[in-house]
Length: 166
Image 1 (cartoon, rainbow, N blue to C red):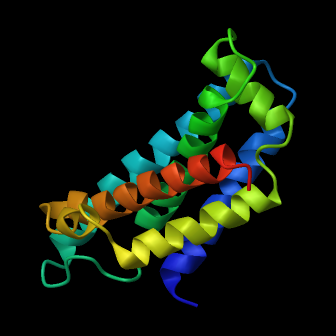
Image 2: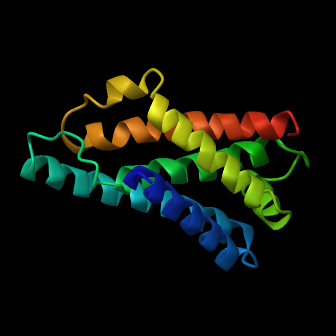
């Protein structure tokens, strides 16, 4: 398997582990934990990608860099769950309470994780607009941004799957 696929698989495990560890916590702790993971992977990935680009200017997106896949995959799962919870009943509750309820009631199950993994990999390989253009951004941003776009597309796909009750 390609390194990017392994990186995506690790991200799925990290999101699932974070959810499992925080499941019994109050709603704000769950939300902050998942989004902290997302932001930490994005920040570390951007920092590391900048260093790789500086060290290997002839290769703008080396295959051995997989932090971009970890970050993009995490965006797809966490943002997809947030979108699903935000638009799901019960109405009148705070968004954080909805996300916590979504985690507690099993929206983050193996089917969701598998669908998110597949959707992210498809969008990461396909690179629909503007993902392909994002690769040409300068420095480490070019390495990371196309995967962030793929993660956003996958999150929308996960939300659509939930909305259509698949």
